[in-house]
Image 1 (cartoon, rainbow, N blue to C red):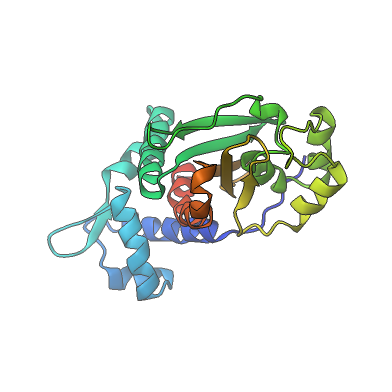
Image 2: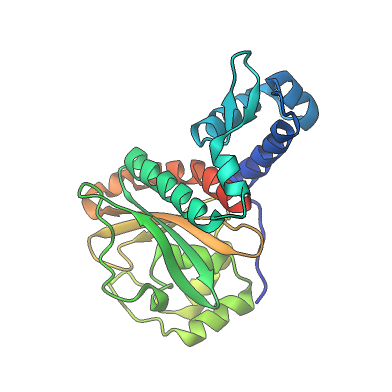
Length: 252
């Protein structure tokens, strides 16, 4: 199975953030923002936004003289000892914060060995998660998560998945034509969130954005009750903007 690697805005942000972190890590006594700009070529305006994100996520800290040094999060993720648990904890904190900022349940999903897996999620009484009334593994054609993951596969990979999972009609809005679905997946821009407008479950709308790191296919998604559908586009845009910290955690 081949993957489609079309860079997204969060991907570019994560790549820039990695360049900043590499520069900060080389300066053991601290690096100023002017020095970071000089070494990375990132504009001061763009660097300000990146440093704000890196400080919020704990990757860098600002010391008394205004210079930047590496933070505790980078130290934990950079250590081979307990890295998997540290990464899981970091991602959960990011998902919890994202849930609260967009006012929706949020999910992380991966495509592993030809199947969809929800690896982590954050919900609350005010932001309930989707009722999985049909196994997500067999309903990729109807969910924002599934469609986002399938867009990241090549044509043969998509056909293989659909051949193994019958496209059942789950609601009146569900696409059950493989030709129509494949056409829509092919036309989906990588920088635009994939939507599910009551295709999986009546009463729920969802959005998902890709978070492909290396050879791993993944996505970040959210769900809202249909009475909050008017917030979906705005929430999806916020999800896209906040995907960079997730990608960064996976890349370190």
